[in-house]
Length: 325
Image (tube, rainbow, N blue to C red; front, side, top):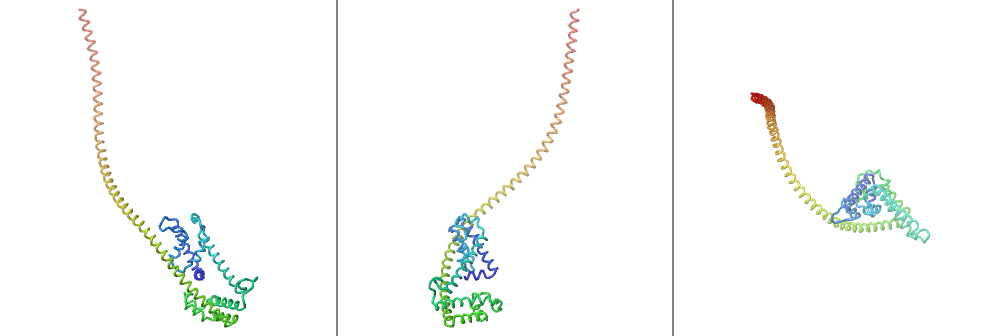
């Protein structure tokens, strides 16, 4: 009820509650799927994530929210957060409404309902007095919403706010209604019952605080262990990064040396191309000269062959003349 009064009082606080659960839901879903130690279920991770955010606790609503989710962890990936949160809000409202209806019915008809023997008149008066006394504060708050003194007090759960509310005309009117309906004795009895209930709630609050402290210590140990594991992973990644940076620097040096070699080879290639071009030109000139000489040799051979044929002809004429003589 305290969590409901705190978070559902205004729209900004409702949005704050929704964002708290959205953050915890995302963290719990991520952590339940991670391979980290200590290993937590989604439900455990959800409670840890909610408590880690601090603020006004809402353990009951957390249980209601988890009840709207599938039990199979594999199905959590497909869950729409807004739908689950709206269902949880509706379920909580229905549960609170049911409790309120039961209390009204008990005050009017007794613990056994209309079909059985009801409460004694004394007990009914006492129950009604407690109910009216308990409603005096919230009704007075609604009626005195514009009171400047109440607006100036930010914390509505503080003793200062309760004192200021008790001095308002609206609260005094509601208390006068309790006296008029139930009488002085029953009103004082109801007040004593409320004081006893307040003491009981204070003891339960202390016990809940101790439970929260135990849970905090357990959560703290789990988170510290996870931080250690993550620190070790971080150190390993840092060492890997350092090693990769060293390798990168070495590779950069090799690349620079390779660039220098490439530039030198390019210069050598240009020089070789120039020398090759010069030699190719000389070779072309020599080839032309050789071709010229080959043509001259061919012509000389042809002239020699013609001269040889002429010589053989003349020799034949000479031999023929000699034989005729």
